[in-house]
Image 1 (tube, rainbow, N blue to C red):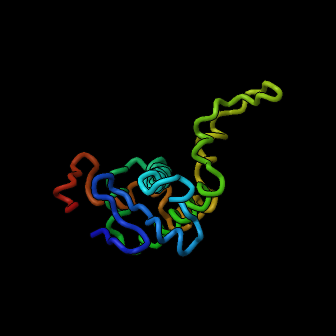
Image 2: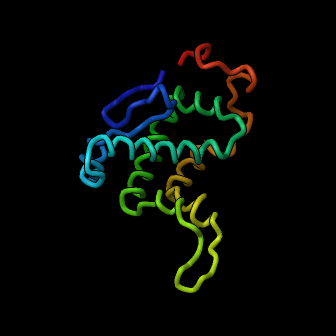
Length: 160
């Protein structure tokens, strides 16, 4: 089963881990409550950070539900996910990379068009997160870690 700790908790509705505000503040001096202006906004920002990392992982597999299950239940992956989320939180706190995805792709200084994939794909995920996930064998896994055939996957049957 997914495990909740003081560092991060599992969101059973969204099926992903989300870092805790106090963990980031106490261990990395990243105060999302101060930066966002309220606890509600800070919690939402940490959820969006998690969603960014999970979407990056899911973009590299055809078996999203099985990968989701694997990320939730594999105890060996929990520290990998936590490390990736912490790196992404640092990146987001310092860089506001999320805003890059909303850019229009035109350099207003010289009118040149900038390819949108420079803003929207890899720019929104921290380079270290890509390395962490690749080194842990999470990206590009294909059918290797399937728990069931894709068409027969059922959340209730799988136990979460």
